[in-house]
Amino acid sequence: ARTYVSIDIDVLDLPLIPGCVSAEPNGMAYAELRDTLAAIAEHCNVVGFDLVEVNPTLDVRTGVTSYLAAHTVLEFLGNICRQPRWERHREARAAARG
Image (cartoon, rainbow, N blue to C red; front, side, top):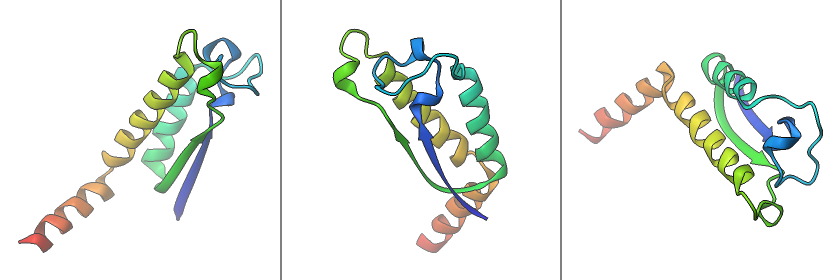
């Protein structure tokens, strides 16, 4: 089945995401989020995703929330693109170009 993933950054533990207005204590560690997203990329046909709840105006001192958000997007996208179905897609596009 085609899967759309919405990543809400406030799932992470409060100290990790000062640039999120709705952060709560006792959230996930980054490694837990990373592993969860890797499993989703491996087992689901991800056709799109978003990442929400990052407010850079609250993140001015360290920028850590924005960094984690960007890192999460890049890592998840990399995991999606490493899946065999994406390799078949790239090969088909290359063959179509000649």
